[in-house]
Length: 579
Image (spheres, helix red, strand yellow):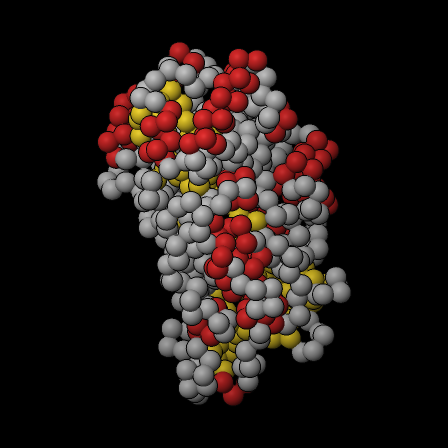
């Protein structure tokens, strides 16, 4: 058998497309700032990709990822494996699917590009599971669907998919909790253990119900009863992989999928993978193939095509192996794809004025006080948005309404008297204390000035624009109503007591959300809107869920619906009942 390189078909050719030579190069940001070099410190900080600029987005006609390579012929196949189900990707969405398939006794094989299963993230999510209702926590279906559709996605997503998740997430969480408990672990709703993420708004002073935030995060509990609020997050993806293997699933690591097999307009019958020595293995799947290969944030050319504004995300904690492999394989056999993608972004990563993270670990990811709803302006000194947007909401105006994806927080030395008494003191990303303020001043992620003019000089604002905006903001504070952005009045406090503080922050992207179009059975659709037999997608490989905005008011939605939809895909393959 000839190797892939002998045929001119390298792994890079299959997985990244034909024209990505410049995608990994560092490119300076356009607009007001220079490029960033470091990733933010977060619990799930996996890898650092390079910086970019909206100016690097490809032209609309350049779509090399849609160009299919030459089909791999039977004489190139070194091994053929017959099975019932193949799951492509041992990550957040693929693992629950592998667990259920193995549990049902079918012959399931999991192929994974990396050398191990995917990393555990912060949480899962869902609605009206036993762990909610036993604590009298209830979510209203109609209200959730209307809010998710209208506020988060601007009526762009498919409403029926929100109902599908809402109805099935409770049963999925109940099933998952039972497995976790059998292993000595557990799950807990965020409302029960009381742990909050930065600026989620819920229960905080200044939260406005207009933003309709949903506290739907569900944390994993280790064998000692500890969870994320104590800095502990169990290796829950490892627990999932172990459970699937114990029940008969076979995992193939360092074995990326490179092509799907489809005869004309017929069903997809197989997936071809490449092992570590370059040999091709063909997996014939009698019941179905699930694409759960993650997102395409590590393919900057592809990401820029489907959402140009995401190139303003100055740093990334996305996984470098997530180059849209599943998306590309689906496109090559006739699948349709969302017209645009959105980004899951952290909005307040504190940086120096030249966009660097401070050395050492004395500064948190977010600088002290800078992620609170204080005055925020862009690089010219112009106010951006309602600063009390919940959770990750401030990411959106930063990457869509600024030249460079950066913003600056402004407050004064009377913060202790002006902030509401119950302002958030911090969490896993931030620490809002006077002591941390001094640390961040020393590290150069916060600056202090005796006058607003001096502050403008430090930050590089247009002085006239900045001073006018502070004057306007102070006038609104005096009037008690934010007529420009309608931030809650409890956070409308004037900037009038020197010394003054400024802190720069940038957006960090974790992943793209959007992908191959699917129906409510998780079947991949072709360009006529019809299902492609035998092919399913879930998680960040699947589309038809989000618009061009990740819903910042629904916490954990990417992980939660991705896991649930992978689980439902297997149910459909096996003819099992779903809600």
